[in-house]
Amino acid sequence: MLISTLLPFITMSCLFISIVLFKKFLIKKI
Image 1 (tube, rainbow, N blue to C red):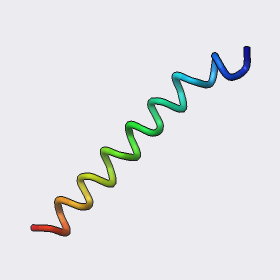
Image 2: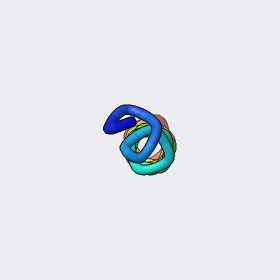
Image 3: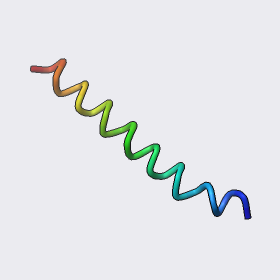
Image 4: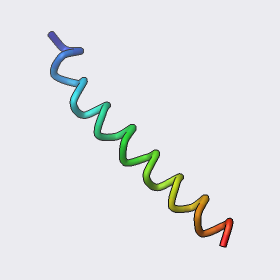
């Protein structure tokens, strides 16, 4: 039950972190 309520939040956090890291990587590359 707890996992199912946390899953959307974890997914959004992972997505947000990967987007931030990807942007940092692009900025470094340029």
